[in-house]
Length: 294
Image (cartoon, rainbow, N blue to C red; front, side, top):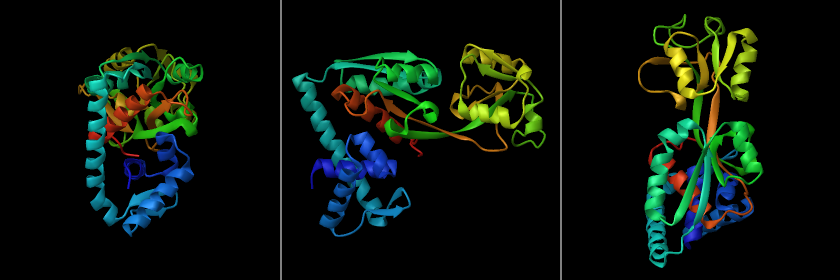
């Protein structure tokens, strides 16, 4: 069995989906399904259990997976070293994401990537969902790490699910002491970024009938948190933006909302070798750091 066959098996195992694996590998779903079936026929037992649209590993599949991953890792290391010696891995990758991702995760992804591919240049752009979508639509960036609110599901590779929470001043405690209810959310104004157009957040605001006079907007994330620290209001956003400095609280909402962070490319039909390598680096980082939870 070939490297490609085992790579398909590994990708389906990581993403739990033939469709998502097909997008990631730039193949058709039928080609991925055929490869999975062929491997299972060749080894003589099933690797996956099909449950609705989700693929889960069988016990035999779980036993095989570490060996598959070691084989793929060794093969990739060989290819990377061969490419490094030939000095042929070149190009430019333009990446866009949010301030939180750029600050907390992207430095580690870039460090590992540039160690392997020093001749690939990277450009980083920071913005909000609407502008990132515009950049993708016009081909101004190659790849984005963003939430799925505004993006075509056909080009979206899910990475990480995170709840929408409410950040509050340190001294504030909701009435039940555990999560934020509608009455709690009316206690203080809601602080939003100047360009927050998030569908999930808007759903919370509309469902709680929070008057527009109780919402005000600030341009920068850190400014939002400074206002929260000083008791000016709450902020409803994803948990990954939590400052982690102990100066504010984060409470779940009464009606849980989940957002999914993922990879989006500007052209799913054609991905340059450099962009494809960077996309693999993102997926590896999330998998290696137990952040891949979709």
